Figure (tube, rainbow, N blue to C red):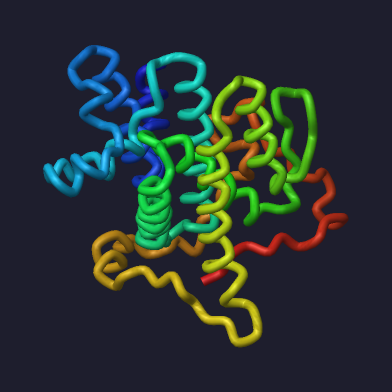
Length: 252
């Protein structure tokens, strides 16, 4: 019965989230079982451009280190906020969500050429969290049951948590910078006077990925009732929605 529940939950996960999280877990397991080595996965411009090991452009986003607290922490946040984005502001827009992955990954790769970073998965997670938090500014968060704060502060709380764990903040800052660039170009600049849309998903991606029509009767669960909820960065919606400003979601 438990296996059926897990399988059902897995199959109900939207496609981009399912593909990315599965790739991360399988890559980490392969390293744990000595099938692969981190030295085959890390970002190395010389090996990529001079020895044509182009898979490193992707695999450096899929390895979060040895299985342990940091791995579980990153994977839980990756799954949760990737899924909420895909089921929320990107619902029915799989191609746009995929192109956000491409845009963010490309920008991080360019930055990594000038910064000594070999794995960018954590930065990518922070980017997802940042974009979600800016698109849900009126949601209240609860972090480990210790503090409550508006969603836009979540990336900064995670940055502080990284400091407490003794981790480098460079990775988190890169994720926040890339997330802000995407948010500004996609959500802010086009709405300004004289602004226009700079990030345009190629038509071929829309043809390949946006095949299912949007269900007009679909009524998504409130985010706090969705599967996979937990106290790490759990959202708390106001009890009386009438007392809150109207949330400004990205509309296309």
